Image 1: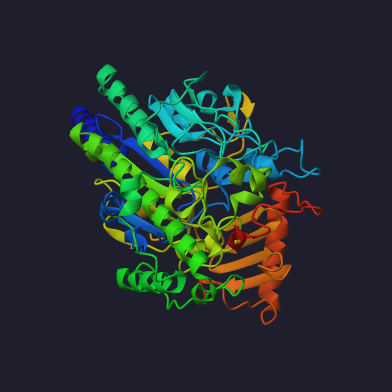
Image 2: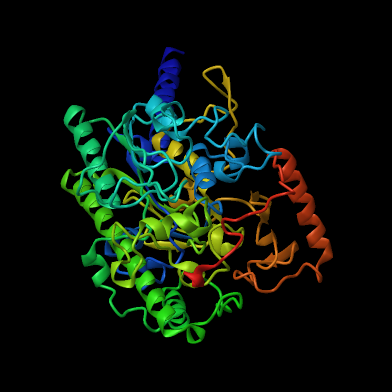
Length: 570
C-alpha cells in the first residue's frame, strides 16, 4: 500500500511538471525573464498606399523593413478622423463610449453634455497605458494627444509617466504656432508640455525629429535606471498632417516626380499594389468625377499641385527617417529583438482643406507665404487637396472624414521576431479597437472588465490579434462580429464581408448603400436596391449599434470641415 502511495505521489509530480511546461509553451511571449517592450507608432493622416510596402513611390526604407519582416494588416480599420481613432486605440472600445462620439470641435448642440460626447477621453474607460503601468511597465509618449487639452485630461493623467505632448490636434512642424487661427491678425502659440509643465520649443525644432529625440531620451533613461523594466512607448507623430512642411533636403528629393499628375501616379501605385499581392482582388478603381482631372487644370495650378505633393512626399520620407533613428537606437541597446513594434495611421489621407476651419480662410494668407518656391517651409501653410488624397488612398474610395474605405482603412503592421506569423500579409478584418487587447495579452495583463479601482468602466469591444500573430488562428473576428462607425452624421457598419454606408450628397446619395467587400472592396457596386433582405438585416444591426453605443445623430449639422471644398481656388 505504501508503495502504491509513492507511485501516486510520483505521478502527481510528473503531471504538475507537464502542466507547468504546457503553460510555458502556451504563453512564450510573456514568460521571458523580461516582458516584451512595446513600441506603438502612429502616423497622422497617412494614406493607405503611401509607404512603399503598401504600394507607394515614396522612399520609406525603415518602415518597409519593419513591414516586410512582420505581418502586414491590409484590412485594418480606424475611425474617419484622428481623436475618435485615438480614443479607441487607447481604450479598446467604441469612440461613442470613450468620450469622442464627435470631435470636440464639431460637437452639435444636441450632443453637448451627453455621455460619450465629452470631447475628451472620459473616465468611463481605463487606458492601456494605465494597465501596463500597473503591471510594471514604464510608460512614455511623445507627440500628439488630442484627447483633452488640460493636464487633468492629458496623457499625464491617463497612465503615461514620461510625456512630451502636443495636446491639441495640429501645429506648425517648425515653429510653436497653432495650425488653426482664431483671428486673422493674430498668430496663436501652440501649447506643448513636458511632464505636465508648459515648455517652449527650441529654435531648431522639427516635429518628427524632436518627438523621436524625446522618446529616445525616455527609453535610454529608463534603461539606465532599471535595465530589467519593460517599456511601453507611444510615438504619436503629427506628420504628415497639414500644414505640409519638411526640411528642404527631403523636399528636393521629389523634384519633378509628380509632374505626370494624379492619374499617372495612381495607376503606378495600382500596379505596385498588384505586384506586391497585398490585395486579393481584381482592382481597377474609377477616379471620382467631383474634382478636375490633371489635363483640365491650368499650368499654374498644375505647378502648385506638383509642389504640394512633392512637399508631402518629403514629409513622409522625413518621418520614415526619424522612425529609423528610433529603431536603430533600440537595436544598439539590444532591445529591438524584445520589442513588439506596431505601426498604423490614425485615419485616411487628408483631402479636406484647412482653409475652411475657423478663421483660416483669412488667417493663412495674412500670415504665411504659400508661393511655390516657399511651400513646405515653416512660414508656409498648405495641404495637398482631394485629388492627391485620392492617390494616397489608392485604391479605395474618398479619404479622411468619410466612412468609406478610403477614410477608415489604414496601413498597419506588427513586427516581433518571436511571433510565428511574420514576413506575411493578412487580409482578415481587424480594427484599432483590437490594439489594446493585443498589447494587454502580449504583456500578460488582464483587462478589469466593467470595474477599475471601484470605478465603472466600459469593457473592451476589440479582440486580441495575438492568435493571428501566433499563427493559431487565421481570423481575428468571426463572421458575426459587428463594427460600426458614425462621425459628422456619416455612417457605416461592417459584418463579415458586408458593409453598410451612409454619406451625404454629393459624396453619396443621402441614403443607405450596401456593398459586399469580398467581391467589391472599392465600394463601386451598390447592392441596396437589388438585395433588400440583406439591406434590412444590416439596417437592423445599425439600429442595434446606435442603441448599444448611445450614438446621437445631429440633424442640424452644417459641416464645413470635409463638407465643402474650394481647394483649387487658392
